[in-house]
Image 1: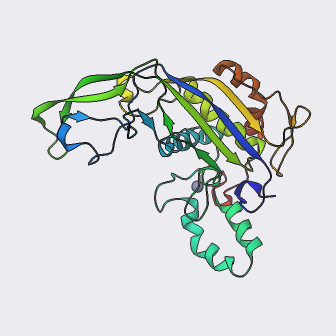
Image 2 (image 1 turned 90 degrees about the vertical axis):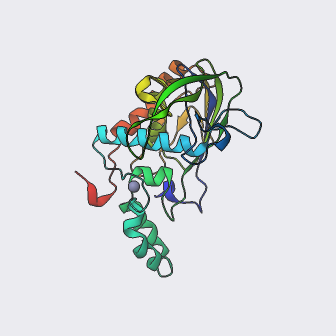
Image 3 (image 1 turned 30 degrees about the vertical axis):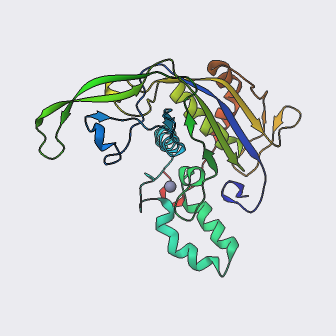
Length: 281
Ligand SMILES: [Zn+2]
């Protein structure tokens, strides 16, 4: 079965939520051209209308997708870059569209066979994401400022107004975290949790100024809820999947959460991912 990419069938809802705490300065910055012209010398962070620092869901998705790419590479499975016009879906879009009106099952099979795990979970053109990552608005925070040398992007030279200030969120700031997934097999839940563990263990930094030691965070008060959890078990929901015995963590600190969810990571580690067909090693 192809539940992971089916939006017309409800098999399972997954919810992971908790808090994150910044262990180092965190800079989720505005893109070029989005900064306030009145403070051009300050590289601003993204904020809500009432000035609270914000990690947009789209930033989370980018972080999760790129961390997943690293994990998939370690496991020897192919993932596309996810960049515009370079996804797995882009290669088969015309074929899928012409099949849609003739044979919907064939269209679903083609998408299943030819897309990588990241396109299936994080989405691609004409393929809705299986998960939503919500905006995180800071609940407790301090803002810091640090002078930076600005190098002209046009000439590469250090300019006269070379000293700019960058804004960041101070260590010890707290944000909420919420992820909701639909029809995720156990191996996909395991994959997502492994991504979170990589972030939690500092194997991955988030946001800007990574080379200056920014972007280390830790998870806390984490809960995992799965709608079809019964008798201490999560059943297998497709051919690649395995049933697991597990106690779902509730309000757990990072370490405890990741040790309780180890069985799910193991299902991912042992899963023989058979897609995308064209790129098997
Ligand atoms: Zn892909």
